[in-house]
Amino acid sequence: MAAINRKDRQYYICIDNAGYAVSLELRKIYESLPDPDAERHGQVRIIDESGDDYLYPAACFVAITLSSAVRQALKLAA
Image (cartoon, rainbow, N blue to C red; front, side, top):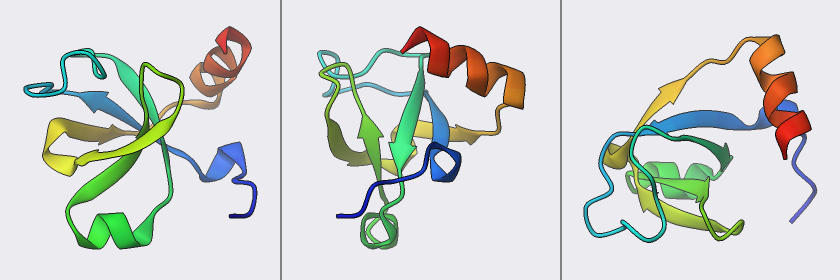
């Protein structure tokens, strides 16, 4: 898989972690990697608490748009 540009990544807030309490925190912002195949199946590829990316039900998240200042702050915090 080719490297993904950070500008191509989407951000989500977790609104439901039922069944995934170890991997996902409610109300936390998560970075996502583009995965059109997963999206067709109602899933999103999320970089979770382990630091790895996994598929989760899209219904567990709400997509958000971050300002460039917030994106920069998240980049510096990583």
